[in-house]
Image (spheres, helix red, strand yellow):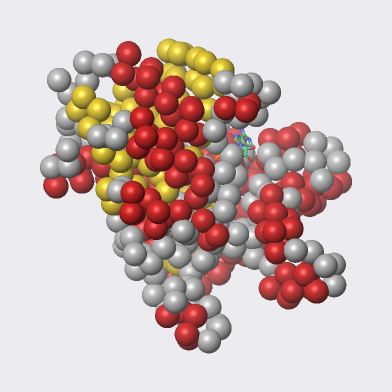
Length: 396
Ligand SMILES: Nc1ncnc2c1ncn2[C@@H]1O[C@H](COP(=O)(O)OP(=O)(O)O)[C@@H](O)[C@H]1O
Ligand SMILES: CC(=O)OP(=O)(O)O
Ligand SMILES: [Mg+2]
C-alpha cells in the first residue's frame, strides 16, 4: 500500500487540489482537480495527471463553501484510491504570522491562532481554514498540515522588512511578511535545475496571477518582496489596489465617511484591474476588450509591475534574471512583452517568437537580463513539505 497526501490550495480566485503519492523521494501526482466557482452551480472537476476527466460533480451555490467541497473530494479519493493510505492533508495557508517559518501540524489550538490572523488576510485566511475545520469534524484522526505563503520570506531582514513607523509596532509584529512563498519556492527550485548558473545571481520572480507579487531572489533565498503585512501591498491585482498612499485611506474615512469595513471591501474586492477597468478582474477579459478603460487598467498593471521590478533589482544590486509565473505570467504574452518593453532601458530584450510560443527562455541572446517563463506548482511544494514532515517526525 502506498502512502498519499491530499493537498488543498485555496487562492483568492481558485481552489485547486492534488493527490500525491509520497512513497518515492519526489511526490508523484495521482490526480488533480479544481472547483470552478464562476458558474451558477459551482463545479468540482477531478482529472488525471494527463488531464483526462475522472469525476465531476456540481453543488448548489448555497452549500459550495470549501468545507462541503473538500468532503466531496475526500469521498471521491477514498472511493477511487482506497487502496492507498491517506497519511495527511496539506493546506496552503496564506498567513503564518510571526510564529511560523515552516510547515506545522494543525491542532485546534494552532488553527485558532491562524484564524486570529484573518484581519491580515481577510480575502484568503478564512477560505484556507474553512476546510481544516470541516475535515477535522468529519475525520478527526486525519493529520492536517499547514504550509505558509509567508514562510519563504521569513528571513527577510531590515530595511526590507521594516515600515517607517514607531518601533513599538514592529515589536508587535507589524512588519513586511510577503506572500506567494510556496510559488516562489517552487520556481526557485526549478530555476536551479533549468539554469544553475543563474541561481547564485540576481533574480526577480514575478508571480502574476489574480494576486500578484515579486520576489527578489539571491542564492535561492528571498531577500525582498512587494507584499507587506497583508496581501494588499505592491502590484496592481485582480481586485486589490496594491501600493497606495495611506493618506487615501484616512481621507476616505474622514471625508467620504466610509466605515472601516467599507474601506476594507473597497481595497480588497473593488479595486485593482476590476476597479480601474470597471469591467473585470480577469486579465483575459481585459485583453479581449476594446474599451479605453480596460486598456488603461492593463497599462497600469504593466507600469506598476515594471516599476516594482526595478525596486527589487535595487535590493539585489542589479538584475541578471527575470522569471514570469502565475496565471498571467505563464499565459499572457502581451503582458510579458509590455513589461519587457518598459524595462528596455535596463537592456531587457524579449524575443517576440519565443514569447509568443511561451518557450522556457524568452529573452534574446543580446538581452542584458535572462527572461524565463516557469509554470508554478504550489501543490507540489506543499506535498514535498508534508512528505518531509511525515518522514522526519513520523506523523501518524
Ligand atoms: N491565457 C491567458 N491569457 C491571459 N491571462 C490569463 C490566461 N490564463 C489565465 N490568465 C489570467 O490569470 C489570472 C489568474 O491567475 P491564477 O494564478 O490562476 O490565479 P490564482 O491567484 O487564483 O491562483 C486571471 O487574471 C486570468 O485571466
Ligand atoms: C497571497 C495571494 O495573493 O494569493 P492569491 O494569488 O491566491 O490571491
Ligand atoms: Mg494564486
